[in-house]
Image (cartoon, rainbow, N blue to C red; front, side, top):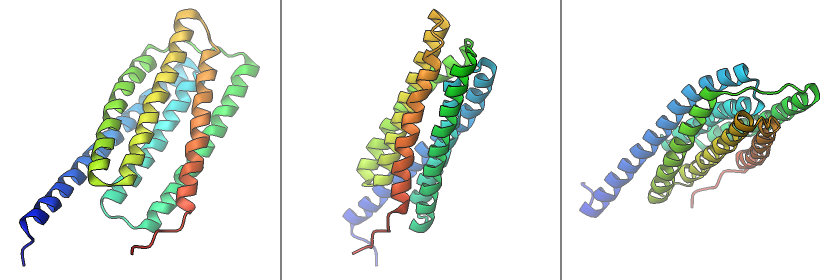
Length: 211
């Protein structure tokens, strides 16, 4: 028996929104895969703690996008919870690593150098992540999907992180304020601890039973 016309339209709309959500996540994945290579290479060349942290954060964002793709394609809740716990552990590890690098930088007095490549990519990432975050929010709200809207907020934070790290790079390059680089790394430490706890808590929560 065929569905009523209104229900067919609703089903078609949901399918279209799901495809749009997947397209946004695939775009985020592609950007972060390219970005983590560029940023980590620039970080090694410039000895920048903040750039290294942002590059590692991009790796974690790749995993977060994969989790959303699983959810949008109907993956089971158990696998999603395990993935969330892994994301949480990865964020905690990121925070510890960056703290260690900041301590090493301050103790050794190793000053980061300018990184035009890193600055250019961060500026592009700021714009791209703002656009992707907006698209995920609008699509997630229309679809009624809290996972997509939550990941959209993560993408927005990624844009803000790019702005913070970019500010550190520019202050160091233009005025020689080398301490701005490790201070920008502290922003990533805060974000890593905050998002790590949130992801771990969500992953440890028992599944909600359908009524």
